[in-house]
Amino acid sequence: MSEEQISDPVQLLGNISPRGTWCSLRMVRSVTESFTVRDDVLLPPSISEDHGAMVTVIEGEGMGVAATSDLSLGGLYQAARVAQRWARACGSRGVIDFSTAPKPEVSGEWSHSIDQPWSGVSKSQIIDRVRSACQGLRTDDRIVQRTASVRRVRTETTIVTTDAVRIDQIHDRVIPWLQAVASDGQDVQSRTNGGRSDAQLGGIEVLDRCGFDDLPQTIGSNAIETLLAPICPTGVMDAVIGPEQMVLQVHESIGHALELDRILGDERNYAGTSFVKIEDLGSLRWGPEILNVVIDPTVEGEVCSAGFDDEGLPARKTPLIKDGLLVRGIGGALSAQRLDRKDDAIAVSRACSWNRPPIDRMANLNVEPGDSTLQQLIGAVEKGIWLDVNSSWSIDDHRWKFQFGVEDARLIENGELKGRVKDAGYRSTTIPFWNSLDAVGDAATWKVRGTPNCGKGEPNQMVFVGHAMPACRFRGLEVFGREG
Image (cartoon, rainbow, N blue to C red; front, top):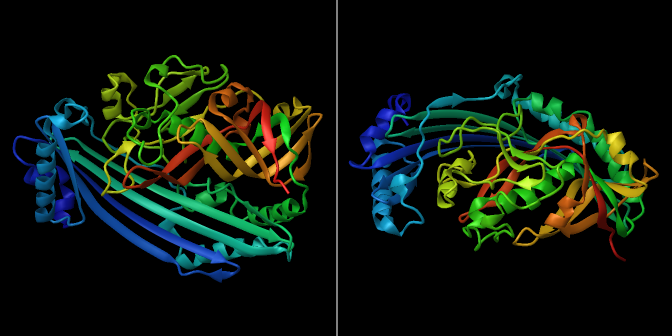
């Protein structure tokens, strides 16, 4: 793309838009860098750059989209004509009348704070830091594999429309990864820095925030402790679930269950549907009054903090479950219009790249902290278990039955943490599980985390999702250990 074209995207859109149509142009440039050291050997570093654009055209009742990596005036002009042909072909066959579909109304710019820019540190310094972390994981000869890596993804997005709206956003995401695998010849156990849930917004300071330099020895030692631990007992018991495991628990049994396109049936072919019905919005008792779940784009450092979604809807903090009651689903402007609930639209229409259209996605999906300290959460358990850091997951297409395994499990006896156990898992069904919630941890237990690998849609879209979670206590949970 020439400097002339980049300097005035609104004028560029005016030059390519078919007459008599509403048109938008979403341009995305992303740069990904990755550095990995495994068993003290540097794997080939990688850097990739990707940029392109998607043109959306609304003509009559129809809407069409077309994407291109040819960012010349001619390339974008042709993409607009392809999108126009699709709009005409769809006509009145769409799920809604797209001529009345919500459109971006507010221009704006958004970016986040960076204390230590990625560009201010040499590649050799980053590699040395990753190499040192990998070495630190070796706390015992029984550590048979060690991996340390850092990945950085910078995304620049510009949206312009024929209504002269322009939106510019920049996200810098850093994903640290640490893993130690231990084996004694009879068993194998793995420990990580959070099951790939440490993605955050920022620069090099993200490594400091997540303890990248200090955690390796702890992770290595915990891997050996877990290897030598007895197998988790099986039974019904009270459980305190830590914030790292709460990330996946909420992601799978609340987040995906509440996506409006799933509820409307759009995901049926690929990732299933949801047990939630349209009539449940505003009426279903999801959990006790201490449960409050929100979409919050304002949290500093959380990976999906933003000013707008990829359809140009301004982002704001919005409750999904308030005092235990389901009040709305996770859907952008189009899904809200389909349900005739325009006021329920949230800025969650997101795309993984320039060559994918936005769909309903989780963004920063958070559980609000409660008022129980970690000591109080554990202290009220006579016989139970601490569960944290996901190791495996399984949930049915309706987001109803689930089973999770964890890396970090310790028995609780008479209100105190006791010995570590291994191969711990738990299972339940969504609404009974959340109604067994007994206490929510306070702000001191609340951790800002995020995952880089939430997949959905056909063709697949892999996106970042933010989760800020407290520790929580549940009563009467079915817990199990490995058999045999």
